Amino acid sequence: MKSELAELDQKRAMPDDEAPDSVPVPHALVPHLNETAILLDIDGTLLELMPTPREVWVPPGLSDTLNRLAQLTSGALAMVSGRSLNDIDLIFAPDVFRAVAGHGAEMRLSVGNEADDVHAPPMDKELKRRLAAIAKLSPGILLEDKGYSLALHYRLAPHAEKAIYEAVSLIRADLPTAPIEVLPGKFVCEIKHSGFTKATGVRELMKHEPFRGRRPIFIGDDVTDETVFAIMPDMNGLSFSVGRRAMGVNGHFDAPSDVRAFLARLLDPR
Ligand SMILES: [Mg+2]
Image (cartoon, rainbow, N blue to C red; front, side, top):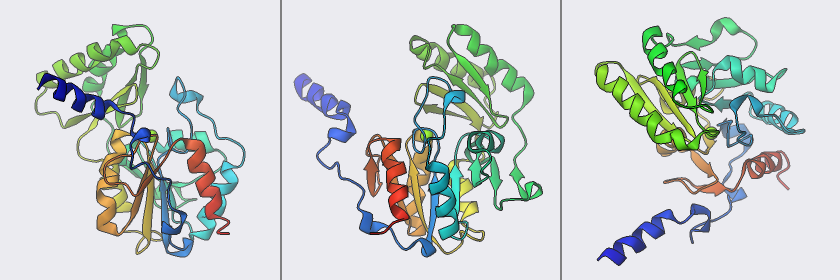
């Protein structure tokens, strides 16, 4: 019995890209760009993860690919990120893209008119202050205030993971009615308002032109992207994961460089 359990655990622990159902993304799956909406997570999907979130960079050629895809989809290309709109703009400057940002707390439905951007109210200050104190648990924990959420990055202090989650649990137990949600990510613990997710943002985005009526393709890599993988079938959409084969996706990519190559290939159907 014990050995069977151990075997099961081993199977579960097997890296997904070694799983027998590992398949490359079939190019033929992708509909014509004039019927498609392209929705892209940024970190770990379009861009390689870096030791700290500020260190990400846009490789040569990506800006051109994204701009041409935006043109060929009549603008139906959007970033779907946990980052704020402001942060996304800094990364891609001078390019400006439509976006679901802050895990759905912010939305940009049109490019060129900031007044149309949608923002949820920021996170409660006192709550934020208490959560921010967790960064003092260990050197190497980086605090990122995203306005609508707060992220504790511990890539440089992986030993602190347990202590971070315990401290967050204590604060939540203390404030049982606070509408907050904890998002575990890759060496990051993020705390956000529970009223929105990437999926609520994508559902809203898809109601608006130029996205409405198109078939969405969503690519994401992390736990928070699973909410979007889950709703893609409702919209006749396709989803692809990066780095692992997530539940319910149509295919997966090994790394962000493969995602970028796939996007570039969409421009050249031959
Ligand atoms: Mg990501």
